[in-house]
Every structure is written in structure tokens, then in C-alpha cells.
Image (cartoon, rainbow over all chains, first blue to last red; front, side):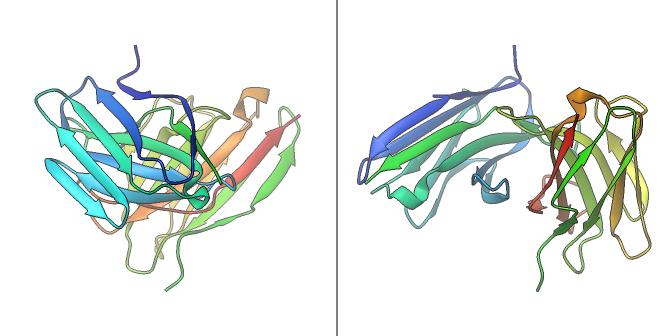
Length: 110
Length: 114
């Protein structure tokens, strides 16, 4: 079993829909990261959080440490949001590496 | 400020050859990490260097090696290439020595081994 699991693996939605991507992890963490990867390969960090909730524009990330679960929400989705969204964790016993989920491929249709 | 840069962007090698990938971190960042991303999977941690010292190594064979230079740029070397080494190799830099910290990623080098 992977230490970081994401769902769904693939998600197709219509423009304007509210999007939720889920991430569960099984290790103790010091932080959880949400990252975005576009088809060209470049990765952009969206959020790093260790508790509660963070918001940036139309993106919202939440984390429940007790349940070892995080969600990434996109409000008023747009075709330019189409990308792979990856959840990664900084494990407590290793400050220097990230453990990554497999990613969720999101396609927003106009 | 320039972001993290990597070179080359693409290359094709033959089984058994060796390859050197290069990474220049964001100015002021002393930490460089390397990741391998096989198609359809999330990245896998290979190495992290901070101020020229290896701070961590993932579960990769000794064919993989890296180093960091005084200007904090880094090289990843892979010897005796295998078909399974075909992947996107990502470099990330950060300011901090200890985590958790936000990492800034380069565009990656896509390696194809034939």
C-alpha cells in the first residue's frame, strides 16, 4: 500500500463545476503539499499546510491531521485548471524528502 | 529572478551509456533535490544536497550519483543506463536546510533510453 493515496485518479468536469481532490496518507507528517503539474512537466507548489485550511484565489486546501486526510478544492473551475494535481507529504522522520502521491489528472471542459 | 533551470531539456541515450543532468537553483537557495518521475506515476526522491553535502538518498542503485558545486548548482549522474531509467528527472531547490519547506521545481529533463 502506498503511503500517500489520491483519489480520484482521473477527473473530467465541465467549466464552472466545484472540484474536490482527496489525499490520504499513512505516515506521520510535518506538512502536506499540494502541487500542480502541467503537461510540459513543470511542477508548481500550490500549498504547504500542517493544519486547518489555506486559500489562494479559487483554490482551497484543507487538512485533518487526526484523520490523515487532505482535500484540494477548486471553485468555478476553468479549462486552464486542467493539469495533474499531486499531493506530497514531508514525513516527520525525514526532513529532506517528500513522499508523493500518484497524482490526479483533471480535465475541465469548456 | 530566474527560476530553477535544468539542462538539457530532452535527451536520448542507449542502454549502457551514462548521462549527466544539470540543475541551477534559484539564487540564494542552497538546497537541491533530485526526483525521478516515470510516466504516469508521482515523482520518486533520489537525492538531496545542502551546501555540497548529501543529506538524503532515496532507494536508488549506486548507478545514480550526484554532487553539488560551490555555486550550489548540481549534477545528477546515471551510469550503465537501463530502459527503466527512462523518465522525467526533476530538480528542486529551496532555501532551508531543515523541513518542512517549500520546494521550487525546474522544468525537468526528459531522458529516453533506447
